[in-house]
Image: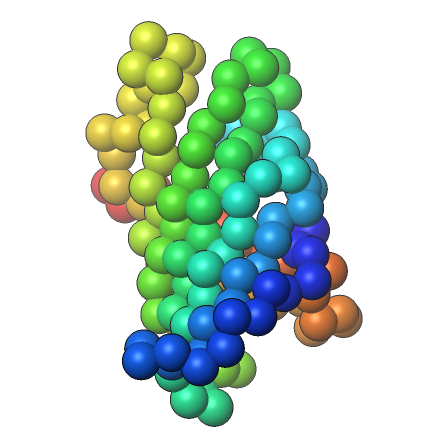
Length: 126
């Protein structure tokens, strides 16, 4: 879930706002909850293009490990955003190998509400 944006305003790079991450859940090969931490540090360049630079923490269900993610990329309004997630993990933990693999993600806005939910699908590049 996303919180209400914190608006900084117009900058030399574009309109800057921070969208807080207020928690949630994730499912797939790894499942668990998204902690209430982090945010999307977002520049809007014009009416069509923006950038996403989100940092957040996942807590796994089975092993209770924390995984820090930084997911960044450029977004075109009305299209699914393609980003590059980077995983920061405990090297000695069960998911330690995530840091050595390559992934892309799709950011899919929830059309039902403006800031409540977002769907992020992550795919490994083999």
